[in-house]
Length: 292
Image (cartoon, rainbow, N blue to C red; front, side):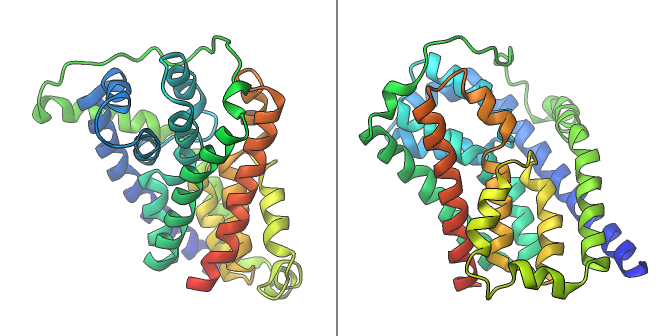
């Protein structure tokens, strides 16, 4: 029990410091450029649109559900299908908080493989979707989103204070899930017998990765919350591939998100999206242990 409490305190402090610093940087970037300018940037320039969608997804710390109002705005603004879908897949999986958290908890090699797999899948999947005719599966309906507008940049000295406020607003809803996630992780690490987890999802179980990927989808969790739980599961004996399959499945798609997507997508595209997330989770689950 003492060991579990020590693990809880250490991981919680590390994650709070990390999330706070990166949230401030992201808030400053959002205040500097604004959503209108970002949409314009995605439509113009020399970079391919999907690469822009990937980069936008990588710098926006959105969970799967909060990605959807932005996606709706992109589609209404005429952003290309591939670009929009790349953003949809990458946003909940590749933001800097997640990547930094994977580095912190699992090491840079695993973080590198995680980033490479999710980025490649985010770019390739929309190409396949488009060739399958999925661009015609977008519903022409209005989805209510954020009313944020671009603000004039007043200089770093004047912007840092409101950026801190925005960062706190972004971090505050995560505090309870973060504490709960770290608590569950610490309890698993300190109390759950290792042999029970190994028996179900150890490295030698061929079904562990696809089973974890499928079971992750019904969970509605931000991957930041799953990181400490994933570390605890891995430390307690669960296969590393199954851990990441569970985290990606849970963060990339969820029941609330899928239900919201039915207002924007026709059934074929909804099913294709879920299958793609599960495929990403399985691919990462098999590749990460090979490199790690």
